[in-house]
Image (cartoon, rainbow, N blue to C red; front, side):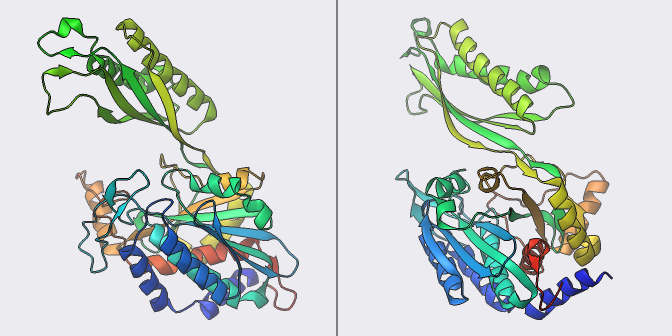
Length: 431
């Protein structure tokens, strides 16, 4: 074994914090989730922790964003990011620490809340990583930045922190690192060079018509018919407007028009939400152009009194992993995790993580770590090989319940190893 990797293994082993403490923190966060922009409690927990272990803390960046800076001599500046927000889902896991909370969201509606995307694990593993790296400071040099981000689920938090002067408040990093829990065997890490996650564009489309009594449809310009034609025609964008070697998805996520309480009324408008995902900027441009063209001309062909409005709700960037940096990190992960270091597949999920790096033109790496019980995973894989239709509860689902360990331990190890890989070598105790 190379002396560098041997040293890294020793650092993790000698400084791994009390896992029971962070399991308790994870359970507490899971039981007390907070929606995007409302992460006050979670932010306070992270802030208190960073201050107690010696970080210089800045809070309330772009909402409830928090950074902790630990300066440890000359060397690279490495930033580690974790997101904090939960989702408006009623939990159905049956866990003893399941969330039963409801809260009033920023839109004024009361909603159930659940950590259905693993952000509770992101926060707890990052808190433990911050402790491990602080305690092992004699082994590395440079500046470490721990960042807790709000409002990832709305694709707003990263940009909000940047717009609030993030890089005037902290040193600019040389590299930005992040990880996400995924549906893979617990104990595994999954890493990929180049494009990893898709870009995503979400639009609210309002289709206008002319209402009428249901008994006199000839008096209407029916927006439900127009909107239905739009939804059906949009299916041809992927099938006929981009090549088979390219990848895109066009999804109509909601269709709202009229009321079941008034079934004899043709409404005067319909509202759609559309979600488009792509892996290539050129393909993205083609798809967006086609979607907007179809919306406009289906309405025109139907004699709509007004052109539909298309409002952008959010836009996620591509998640691109710098190849040279990934190769360096892969060497570390492969040596440490051995057969549990996997090559990640390209995913159509999306993240705003990359904004932290592209804004200042530095490389970034984003990877996954698994959270599925090993026995359940092996049965799932065997059933798939046999051609059975099987399902694992996944992110954004009410029954999503990652196994506690070795999930958290792997997340702590992976993030700590990544930071150490890109930090400077200590002259006192060389890696």
